[in-house]
Length: 404
Image (cartoon, rainbow, N blue to C red; front, side, top):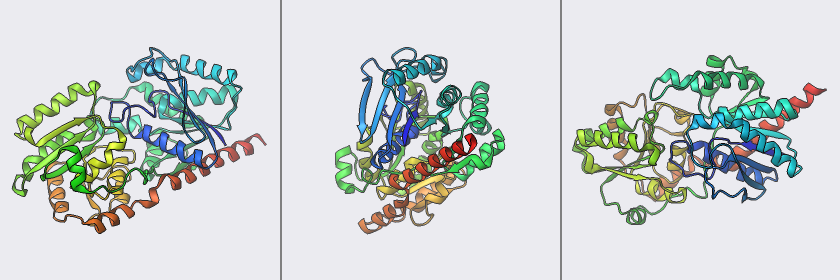
């Protein structure tokens, strides 16, 4: 298949851990790489985020990344991207014409890109499938952080009705689409996210700690965007409850200049509960460095209020490090409580402290770490790519049947 992937607001090679670059970017890049290996031709379209962005670059076998002008050639607020979508779409069409490009299917990511997919369907009759990654109505129902505008909800409803097929990562997200948006269950395919087993693998703990400048304290690790939905405040409040268990350090990976206000709030909280010396804010880290952080940690903690799936736990487990997480995304099917970590019913500091203490009781040897790693082998991206390709084929067959 020749596949056009649309990711208008977030660049797949952007800095992970920034406000608008997270699991979705990892998903697009890794999925495209595996689909390319299987012989499909993939072009990923995103907007120019920096004047230095190349117009086109090869990411991997059969995979190209194309930057299109849409608004200022800089990082802009997410809603500003919405108002730049007409320019993005105009430049996308021109690029197609200039290079005589034709595609079998469009795969859009997030609600803004779904609007581009809808336009391409209406004007070129190219079937589009979409993946929302998060849903505005669900975020509003949780009520943590900024509310999502009606514009987003209306756009999600519109594209849900028009797209040929929707891919979701969990059965819960499928239920949410039906419940909040009256989506047809028959057009929703459930395919989990994946993990790069070649990149994420165990590193000797002593070596990892030496490389990162960490001591022999018990290390708790948080990896992700600095966002209220991630529940980092409750994780910081957990630290005073662990004082009787020995010396702990919480290492926080993620955040950039756009997260400065949230970071300052977390630092103030750490000072208020007298754990400032026990929290290490590392900021942005290149993905290639993450296996060292996971391997150096005694436990990775995911205290989120909401995750559409949960890539960080997969990465940690692939590195042989157990995970404590709230029951969000698909984590209850990924983490085996008592074996590879613990699922908590909510992210209260008391529940997190109890779970962290329990998981800390055992210190996995190399054999145990390899067993933890093998527990997530079925989520390797090569397996996920096969399932996504099958969903695309289903969408194409449905389109042919509709035309006939």
